[in-house]
Image 1 (spheres, one colour):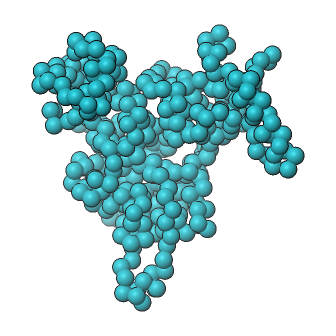
Image 2: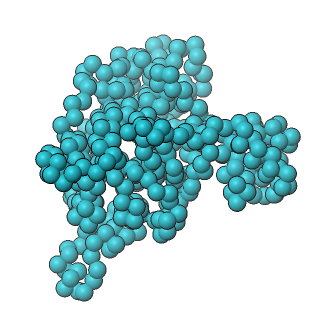
Image 3: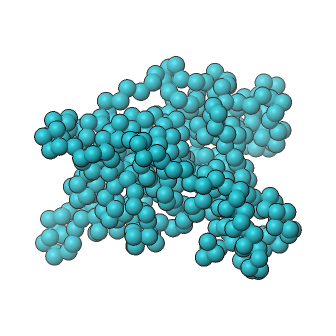
Length: 413
């Protein structure tokens, strides 16, 4: 285990620096210096930390041999693990995680204590996919980077290569495609913003589907799903589901719960006396937001803040929420409005829900960024449960060819 850095080992311990320091017998300031690489701890510190990891953290979950839904999956561009929760919940075991942001890594490790490190930049692993363990399902909330598609006929005329090695090279989708091409998982689930469909006049999305369907040979379906049936937030995301073999899974045919009967904001708000006054807007910020809205209203624009009460469903929580909270302000009768607290954001995104408690190990600023970049967990749980029987079939005994031919063709696949 000692090949890992102190930072990686500390993450594996599932402890914050303040929690770990007394366990090791050092001050937090000393541990911070080790974490930043300014000084190096003694070998005895590494041994003590490894012992803490070995005995204070649960071993990776093992799947029963007779569990037909047991499968291995990887979590790329993992953020804080929203996709993972859904697929872990149907019997999956995460064998590899990649997330480049150190603050997101911190939150991920505090909430998934299973003794495998969170790896950084995925590009290292797309260059050498053998570094990634074998897996059955690939999950990736890949960022959408602009890339254009050049005509294949033009490239042929110029004697240039075509396909994803050219069309998407330099993008993070390319790295995802490289890993899929190498490992050939039975299925994958990709997630992105709704606007991916229309980016660059639809060319970006067409390139992605061409790669997945025609070059990698997967049966691919896509659907934009709103979160409002599950949480009091209108957040639309596109999901791209691919099976290596033809299956009966029908993404478009899934019947979603009714948004009209979905929860309202009051269901996730903390009691007023539990909310720190620091989340109430300052007089100066509140005056600025009102003036900003009035200025744009005079021009016929809709820019400005949005105010919500307990019977409402909010707009989309964004990664910029930490700046002023303007897209989701909570009305406080007789007082200035306030931001959501980080715990309320965790509830709004479905991370803290029912018996599941979410540990927020970072600053408010980082927490807002993380939740604003995340997926809504109950949406993923719904999708994972819908895929569960088809994953079981794909990972079970081989389907005879004649039976496979009788399976319905997936929409768009």
